[in-house]
Image (cartoon, rainbow, N blue to C red):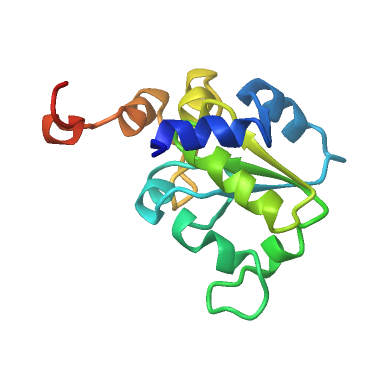
Amino acid sequence: MKSFTDLVQDSLQEIEELFPWDLSEKMEDAYHSMLLLDIREPAEFDAAHIEGSISVPRGILESACDWGYDDTIPALVEARDKEVIVICRSGNRSALAALTMKQMGYKNPISLKTGLRGWNDFEQALVDINGKQVDVDDADELFVSKVSSQQMGPET
């Protein structure tokens, strides 16, 4: 049996990752064509995201990446040959999503290593759903793990 961590580690053998500072540099290049894909849940995206990213929750990724579904996102389907930077909170869900996209024929899905936590630690801009800049300290609170004692499982 594999754990979530095992699955993420396996996916990292198959995909590329990009550090936040490298993404920031790419974003400054006006000629660099890429798609920023945030796969967090809608409430997470609404609270803070990288400006210009599109929101496609992980739960509908596969149908959003293909034609003919209620969830189809044309800009995403048409990005199969583009660099697609996949974003989540910490870089785990994005690694799994990037592997899925690679399996679906995307040529260059890249996971944002350290996710938005790392992006915020690097003090890069985040906006909320209304386009208002999110304070770095407020964003820190959004990205803190909130695992409860019940979620830790039995002690071994």
